[in-house]
Image 1 (cartoon, rainbow, N blue to C red):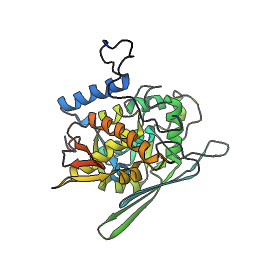
Image 2: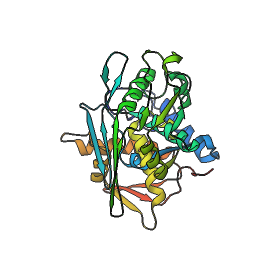
Image 3: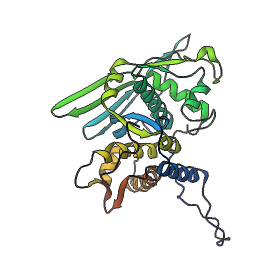
Image 4: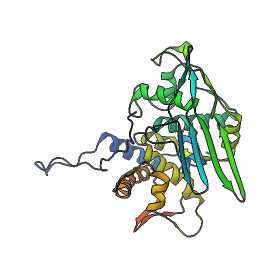
Length: 318
């Protein structure tokens, strides 16, 4: 995974060079996949395999989208907050400091772990016989998926299993804090390939505290959409936010101002053109998210984005 937010900046349709104006528009592979997935979602009845879950806090304040320099990360949005502290893993000889997890892989991994735990009503989750098999269970081929393939997956899996999460949220007049690791047990593998079965744990156990809060605050998402958006962590976050917000709107639409959106999603945009750069990039990410969430009623308006009451992206009970 590159150490930068990998939001795609290609237009929905890429045109050919000016020297051949008569040529038809050419779709990028990424755009073609998004459109195909959007059509499938709109026309095909979802199955149980298409249902996945994200914690509601992580729909509002997700993992970092690019590498974090340091051992701490914090993001706050309204009455929700996420804090991440980097951890260490024992490699058989010494404790090795892990980075803060970032990018699309932790989002895909947590969606899978959340879903498996909720389906079995148990924090003990089967993750296949090897890392390669687990990648396929995430809906990706070995070496495919988010940029960086297996090497990126391995790095982010280790970082995620070692980190400590702090989730903060307000319910009524109560301020609630969850503090701990989402993964209670993970037997880190020492091999640098995904095929050494004896070093892959075969199962991952979520911490009981995280599992308990997940059961109360899980948001249903469409796994097909999440996978199609996995080239961009920002597009995944935009989709998760819409999935959590739109179904809860009653009555009048809700306007999200660009300033608030940047505070929620654009903390890593700095400099004199930060607001302009964020606005341009977020519009692209939002457009991508809407392609695979055809039921969403969202409109760009002066000063921000207008959200209207919409069905959830996928029924929670199929």
